[in-house]
Image (cartoon, rainbow, N blue to C red; front, side):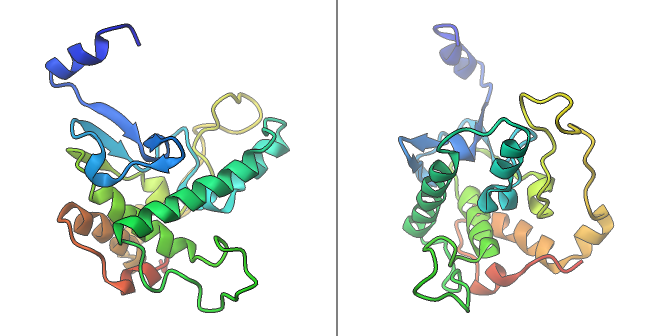
Length: 204
């Protein structure tokens, strides 16, 4: 950015745009209370994979399949997931039933977490941000796994042509979808979600 531009934008009251995956200090995610206020904080957008795909590493598999994978990406993703779980735990938003009921001591530490419980905690965590605006991608909230767009591709992936796997009417009638919206709402109020929210999947 040109020198002084950030200061000028701030004077004009123009908000920044923060994407939660990049709100870091080193490897650590910035706590909600320390995130910048004059911003739209987004869980995801069209250029990052939906959370469920990110958590499962499906985006990395897809990049490998089209020859755009990076060495060490999987190990970095594991570190990122660990940092996220740590941030959610530090904030006290990770539900008591976040561990899978059938998890064993032999399981990988991160694999033992229920992905929906982590996602609901993340929604509540984002809602608790001091950012004036918080946005959740419909693609994320619908638990989609296909990306809308893969930056750097042209013919390798049908960018901007993916469709939601469910209708908006079906999504709105889903208790899981509404619970995810409620997790954000509770976060904006500074309230923790009940443990039952973490068990709500998609049931449309």
